Each structure stands twice: as structure tokens, then as C-alpha cells.
Length: 458
Image (tube, rainbow, N blue to C red; front, side, top):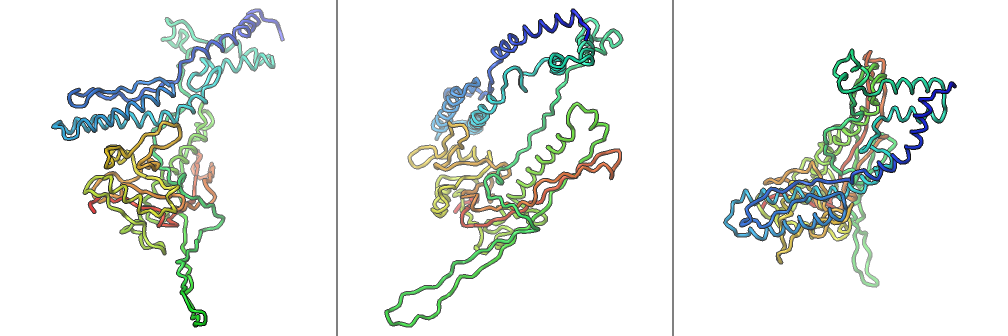
């Protein structure tokens, strides 16, 4: 390889400066920050001081902000009991604090992950200014081939030009392409966590059958010499759990797959898997069993699948008010659940319902909901964990707005093989079709371990 003074000087300068720049860059990276919602100011005569949840990425600061928000929430409720104030203003205030507390809880859980993802010398949040040139230079310094040398010089020649010439392609604008994001940000899809909470059974055949017994075994007391007539014996019942099939058949041109800077094939399959997770989550909760799982809510008394299980339906407990939750209704639900299932029991409701139960108190004036101050630990309602299920019905008269019980004991997810991807370049030329399928089923295996809360007076 020929000696090039300019390249040698540039290489030496880069090698000498690189550790210092890397350390400096790492030292000057901005801390991870959280900007939680700012609660709008309200008249102090009505609601007292207003909290603003502007916190840094420090975990202690976030926990302190969450505690402050919780105290403000309690103070707002207590200060306006019986007050002749505009109900809409108070509701707006409470909704704003609710949103702040939810954001802080989510941030506490995500904070450790964000810190772990931050890497020394460049990461997703702090990328290298020119990763391609950096990688080429690093490769050249390790291997030193003539081709890499020429590529390095070419890359150096086509670097950014002076601002006065960038606007005209003929004057050099062609050499200064606009930097663009090589990742894709997708719109949020809410996926309920029923699969994570339930029992998952993988099968190797077309279906799955589970046996149940009524445990109706007869017995009796007898004297020493009395006759021993035959007693009744338990009976068995079989309950089948079939599967339905999810599918997607997305297509992309071969040219796009070949030339795109982004791995379109990997991204497209990932999007399909996310959509499958959303669809099956909805079915686990409200599916009708036709080419899909039997949904959990269908087994509640009065539901389409209420008579399907040999042990009967999931019991519905009235909330105690025509269009709202009540503390008494929630307490009744907790104590209607058999004690055997209490250790793993949780509340399941959506965020709208959670915002309503946060305002409830017990007979001593204590709030029955308590926020979590530990990352990864859920908030509690009457001392029991609360799980956010986006697909649960909203709070309304007659709605099954919440569940309480042991989901792992209650619901069974049946999985056959999992996600299967067929890459089809023949059917629709010049497009490549990605035919993706997943066979999954589900249903209630024990209705006694779950209770539903139905909005309505007793």
C-alpha cells in the first residue's frame, strides 16, 4: 500500500483523539429525563396548591413526585367534599393528577431499562454523527486494504460542503444528502396482558380436551354392625378447547427489499406479530369461540358461554351503584372469592375505571387505592394488585367493568406451534408475500377462581 501523508496524518489524529472524544461524549451525555404532564392551575380557593410534575430522570425524584401527586390527589378530594364548587373543574383537576400519577408510575418502571440501554460511546439516544464513515475507518485501520483506502478517501471527499453551495445540486448539493432516521416509529397499539397472566398450554395436535369432575362422592355415618349401602361416585365431564387461526398476507416488492436501508422483511414480520398479539388479546377477553378463542367475559352469568363450563358461570357481583364503583361493592367482590384463590388474586380493569376507583375511600376516610413506589410493582386496590387491561369495558351502567381473581387458575390459553412465516416469491410477482399464521385458542378452565364486577345497584 502506498504511503499517503494526508491519510496517515488523519489516521494518527483520529487514533489519538478518539479515546478523549469518547470519554468526553460519555461524560457530557444529558441525563435521561422525564417530562410528566403539567397539571393546570386551578383557583386556590377551590382546590388548594397545584402540583407540577416536572422531574428529572432521577428515580428518587420520580418517586418523590409520585408521592407528592398522591398527596395532592387526596387533598383535592378531601377539600372539595360538600363544597359548592363547579364539579367539572374538580373533575378536570382530579383527571390531571390521575394522568400525572400514571405517567410517573410508568416512568419509574421504564427508567432502569432506559439507563441499561445507554451505551458508552454511542447508542440509540446518542448516535454517532457519521456511523458509516466511522465503521469504514475502523475497518481500514484493522485490515488496511487498497479498496478500503479508496473508499475512505471517497467518503472523505463527499463529506459536507459549505452552506453557500448545498442548495444547488450542480454546485455540490448532490454530495450532501439529508440525514434521515433509519428506524421506524410505529403508532401505539394497546395490547392487553391476559396471556401473560393466564396459563399457557402448548399442544402438538389439532385440539385439547380437559377432564373435570363434580367431586360428588357420597359418604355417611354408620353403626358398628349396620349395613353399608352403596354410595354415589364422582362423575367426569370433558371440555374441549379448540383453536382458531390468525393470518396476515402482507407484500413488498423485491426491489424494495433489496435496496431499502431498513430491513423491511424483519420490520414487516415484527409488525404482523404485534398485530397478532393485539388480536388474540381481544379474543381472550371477548371472543365468541367461532374460529377464535372463547373470551373470558362470555363465561360471566348471562354471557354467551355461561353454560359451557360444567361447573357453571363466573359469578357477577353488583358494584353497589347504578353507574359507578363503590367501596362496599369492591369489598363484597373480594370476599366472595374463595380464600384458596386469594394469594394470587388481582383486579383487572382499564385506565378509565382505575381513575374512578382512585377516588374511593373506606369507612375511616382512607383511600382504598395506593400507588406503587417500587419499580415493577403494581398499584394496589384494597391491598390487591391492579392490572391495566385496555380492552375491558368502560365504566357504564350494566357493564362488566372489572374482574377480580386468580387469572392463572381461571383462563387457559392453547397454543399450536406459534407464529409461522411463509415467504412466497411466486404467487404475486414482482412482489414477495409474507404469509404469516398463528393457531391459538382459549377458554375458562375454572370459573370459581374469578369474580366479575357488574355496574349496577344490588
